[in-house]
Length: 265
Image (cartoon, rainbow, N blue to C red; front, side, top):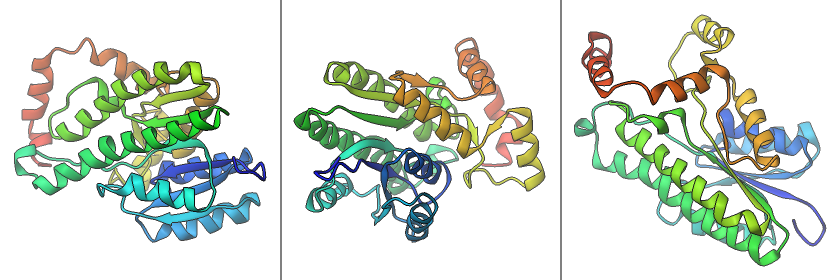
């Protein structure tokens, strides 16, 4: 919140998908969203949100995997006198395939994006929230894969597991400061991550196997504003998370060796 009383929300990875939906739904609640993304489409996303909800929506083009990204974002908001009331760390990337075949640069980027920059943003903005003494909200986007180490997405699931532990600890650290921290663990979401035809997308959404960005954002924000520690959107995802605790390791290894998986590596 600024001196004028306007509330601001910062959303990373906001050019499309779930991040864009977070920006829209926060704007509908009266927040002015800062949309941070490296994609050029973030400019159009901000214009769309501003026009639809009649709020100030600010685009910020930044590569969120760069080591200095968090510091640059914080400096940008400080220079403009913007105090962030809601921080949504949503930016993410999927690295699929055997780790030994990946480039070290790609592995470094996913760790930086999911772990390093997210942690630094929380450090900077939680500190700002504490100094202001007005409370605040922080939402972290993890994944249902945080609960099980899946072959072919080793770096992805490991970094999401980091966010699970980080979010839980941060929730308890900041609870007495009236800063609410919620970690969201979605399953499959209808975003460009998944290369599916329209017919299969519709079927998976209808069957509950895949969620829409709108549903994930709505459930995530509901959990955040109610002060919940975590949110697992959808019945199917909840079943997968709880069921993963019962799956023996040999079944995961057998699935990895299957021709269906091997053809996609």
